[in-house]
Image (tube, rainbow, N blue to C red; front, side, top):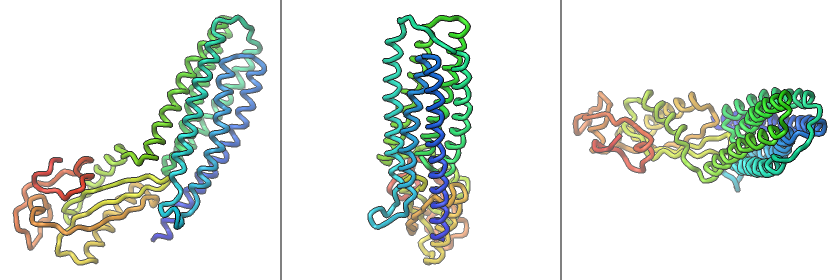
Length: 340
């Protein structure tokens, strides 16, 4: 079983790395196209797009390296693998995007009141429109694969590329307005507007990566898991608590305590753990690693126990505890007085 899981993780990691390599190569091509568009037009808005593409190139190469490291098998020095490097990669990428956005705002503000001539705007619009279409397709594939394989680095790259598409689309709209009105300051205004969007995107990526580095609880993931457990709860699962989820690149590590009837032998208790593991793997795939500690139920567990055929019950069943993010994460067994 472990060999199958490991092989699946390695396959996902290889796929992540292959896509990121393609993204890095594509970023270089798109940067060249946007640079040509800027050279032809002298548009500061197109320069904004080209400068962000420099960030795309650097971020793409950093992403390739991080996914290469992340794909390495675990060793004695890294028993949980090397997946954390993806958070560092995403943090660097987010920082580059943020700094680029600030730089663009400052540069565009300086040209806002200057008089200058824009050339061949129609050719410039065509070139950046082509890059926008390619960027969106690449970003969609990148983000979808990243979500599937739990890769923050790929998700960050995908979101970055899609955001780049939205900003490019806005820049194109501004350039069209400039083309028909001949009002030159529109060029700088458009650059400032979309540089603000770029800056905010960089902040969001930084925030997400720091959360991963600090092992911040993923509330959305935990809530999904709680819902799944409540909907598929077995009668022998008397209680569940002390759940912890940590992300290491494409791998999710889950620790939990599962309370089962005290008279279960090792085989029976392990069967319940297998059922729990199978349920979660069905939803989250083999990239999920689960470590479950089995606890024996106590007398105070009887009022919340839903097992109908317990021959040694000491107290009647009073109520079923509805598991929630709060009580399932608590480091204590639940009782009748536990709040849901």
